Amino acid sequence: MLDKHTKNQITASVEFHFKGEKIVACIDLDLDLIMQSNLEFPDLYPLLAHTIDLDVYSYEYEMLQAGEIKFSEAKGSAADFLRAKVFEIDAFKHSWRENEKLQKVSDIAERHMNIRDLNREPKLKAALLEAYAQGEALL
Image 1 (tube, rainbow, N blue to C red):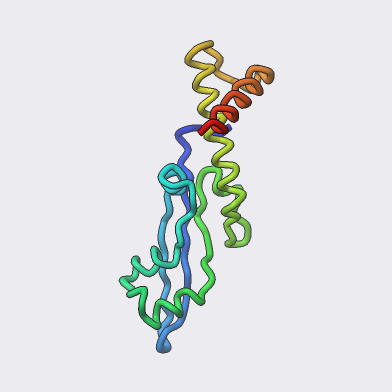
Image 2 (image 1 turned 90 degrees about the horizontal axis):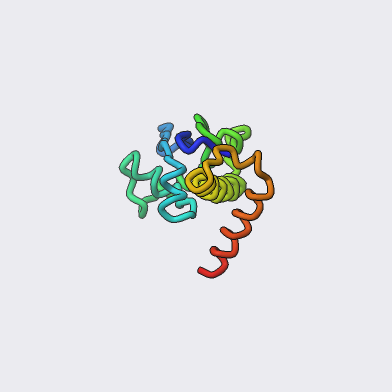
Protein backbone atom coordinates (compact mmCIF):
# COMPACT_ATOMS: atom_id res chain seq x y z
CA MET A 1 0.00 0.00 0.00
CA LEU A 2 1.23 3.46 -0.83
CA ASP A 3 2.04 5.98 1.81
CA LYS A 4 -0.76 8.49 1.45
CA HIS A 5 1.80 11.30 1.61
CA THR A 6 3.87 10.05 -1.31
CA LYS A 7 3.25 12.23 -4.35
CA ASN A 8 3.13 10.61 -7.76
CA GLN A 9 4.81 12.87 -10.27
CA ILE A 10 6.46 12.52 -13.66
CA THR A 11 8.00 14.77 -16.29
CA ALA A 12 6.78 14.51 -19.89
CA SER A 13 8.75 16.01 -22.75
CA VAL A 14 8.88 16.01 -26.49
CA GLU A 15 11.70 17.13 -28.74
CA PHE A 16 11.25 18.15 -32.35
CA HIS A 17 12.84 20.27 -35.04
CA PHE A 18 11.17 23.18 -36.79
CA LYS A 19 12.86 25.41 -39.36
CA GLY A 20 16.24 23.97 -38.43
CA GLU A 21 15.75 24.71 -34.74
CA LYS A 22 15.59 22.07 -32.03
CA ILE A 23 12.60 22.69 -29.76
CA VAL A 24 11.90 20.91 -26.47
CA ALA A 25 8.59 21.12 -24.64
CA CYS A 26 8.49 19.81 -21.08
CA ILE A 27 5.88 19.60 -18.34
CA ASP A 28 5.85 18.24 -14.79
CA LEU A 29 2.68 16.28 -14.08
CA ASP A 30 1.06 15.78 -10.70
CA LEU A 31 -0.39 12.33 -11.35
CA ASP A 32 -2.43 12.26 -8.14
CA LEU A 33 -4.16 15.49 -9.09
CA ILE A 34 -4.84 14.17 -12.59
CA MET A 35 -6.27 10.92 -11.27
CA GLN A 36 -8.37 12.63 -8.58
CA SER A 37 -9.82 15.20 -10.95
CA ASN A 38 -10.96 13.04 -13.82
CA LEU A 39 -9.52 9.52 -13.56
CA GLU A 40 -8.26 9.83 -17.11
CA PHE A 41 -4.91 10.81 -18.44
CA PRO A 42 -5.11 14.07 -20.40
CA ASP A 43 -3.93 14.53 -23.96
CA LEU A 44 -0.39 15.72 -23.31
CA TYR A 45 0.33 17.37 -26.65
CA PRO A 46 -1.83 20.47 -26.02
CA LEU A 47 -0.35 20.77 -22.51
CA LEU A 48 3.17 20.53 -23.89
CA ALA A 49 2.35 23.06 -26.61
CA HIS A 50 1.09 25.49 -23.98
CA THR A 51 4.42 25.32 -22.13
CA ILE A 52 6.19 26.80 -25.15
CA ASP A 53 3.33 29.07 -26.27
CA LEU A 54 2.50 27.08 -29.41
CA ASP A 55 -0.77 27.63 -31.22
CA VAL A 56 -2.51 24.24 -31.51
CA TYR A 57 -3.62 25.20 -35.03
CA SER A 58 -0.10 25.71 -36.37
CA TYR A 59 2.26 23.63 -38.48
CA GLU A 60 4.72 23.83 -35.60
CA TYR A 61 2.15 22.08 -33.39
CA GLU A 62 1.81 19.32 -35.99
CA MET A 63 5.57 18.83 -35.77
CA LEU A 64 5.30 18.63 -31.98
CA GLN A 65 2.60 15.97 -32.33
CA ALA A 66 4.86 13.95 -34.62
CA GLY A 67 7.41 13.75 -31.82
CA GLU A 68 7.35 10.93 -29.30
CA ILE A 69 6.56 11.93 -25.74
CA LYS A 70 9.26 10.71 -23.39
CA PHE A 71 8.92 10.46 -19.65
CA SER A 72 11.47 10.94 -16.87
CA GLU A 73 11.89 11.99 -13.25
CA ALA A 74 9.12 9.71 -11.94
CA LYS A 75 8.41 9.97 -8.23
CA GLY A 76 6.26 7.88 -5.94
CA SER A 77 4.75 4.69 -7.30
CA ALA A 78 4.90 6.21 -10.80
CA ALA A 79 8.58 5.21 -10.83
CA ASP A 80 7.48 1.56 -10.94
CA PHE A 81 5.81 2.19 -14.30
CA LEU A 82 8.61 4.07 -16.06
CA ARG A 83 10.79 1.94 -18.31
CA ALA A 84 13.23 3.34 -20.85
CA LYS A 85 11.45 6.73 -20.99
CA VAL A 86 8.09 5.03 -21.61
CA PHE A 87 5.40 5.45 -18.98
CA GLU A 88 2.96 2.56 -18.70
CA ILE A 89 -0.09 4.79 -18.20
CA ASP A 90 -2.79 2.11 -18.11
CA ALA A 91 -0.89 -0.01 -15.59
CA PHE A 92 -0.26 3.07 -13.43
CA LYS A 93 -3.95 4.06 -13.54
CA HIS A 94 -5.03 0.56 -12.51
CA SER A 95 -2.52 0.45 -9.65
CA TRP A 96 -3.43 3.98 -8.51
CA ARG A 97 -7.13 3.08 -8.36
CA GLU A 98 -6.44 -0.12 -6.44
CA ASN A 99 -4.22 1.75 -3.98
CA GLU A 100 -6.93 4.38 -3.49
CA LYS A 101 -9.45 1.65 -2.64
CA LEU A 102 -7.02 0.03 -0.24
CA GLN A 103 -6.23 3.35 1.40
CA LYS A 104 -9.93 4.08 1.93
CA VAL A 105 -10.70 0.73 3.51
CA SER A 106 -7.50 0.92 5.59
CA ASP A 107 -8.60 4.31 6.92
CA ILE A 108 -11.97 2.79 7.87
CA ALA A 109 -10.31 -0.13 9.68
CA GLU A 110 -8.04 2.23 11.58
CA ARG A 111 -10.81 4.66 12.48
CA HIS A 112 -13.36 2.07 13.63
CA MET A 113 -11.20 -0.82 14.84
CA ASN A 114 -7.81 0.80 15.55
CA ILE A 115 -6.18 -1.53 12.99
CA ARG A 116 -3.13 0.23 11.57
CA ASP A 117 -1.94 -2.53 9.22
CA LEU A 118 -4.79 -4.10 7.31
CA ASN A 119 -2.37 -6.58 5.73
CA ARG A 120 -2.19 -8.33 9.12
CA GLU A 121 -5.95 -8.93 8.92
CA PRO A 122 -6.38 -10.55 5.48
CA LYS A 123 -9.99 -11.66 6.06
CA LEU A 124 -11.05 -8.19 7.17
CA LYS A 125 -9.16 -6.65 4.27
CA ALA A 126 -10.92 -8.95 1.80
CA ALA A 127 -14.32 -8.22 3.38
CA LEU A 128 -13.80 -4.44 3.28
CA LEU A 129 -12.58 -4.53 -0.32
CA GLU A 130 -15.57 -6.66 -1.33
CA ALA A 131 -17.95 -4.24 0.40
CA TYR A 132 -16.22 -1.35 -1.36
CA ALA A 133 -16.58 -3.09 -4.74
CA GLN A 134 -20.26 -3.76 -4.11
CA GLY A 135 -20.79 -0.12 -3.16
CA GLU A 136 -19.06 0.96 -6.40
CA ALA A 137 -21.31 -1.37 -8.39
CA LEU A 138 -24.37 0.46 -7.05
CA LEU A 139 -23.18 3.80 -8.43
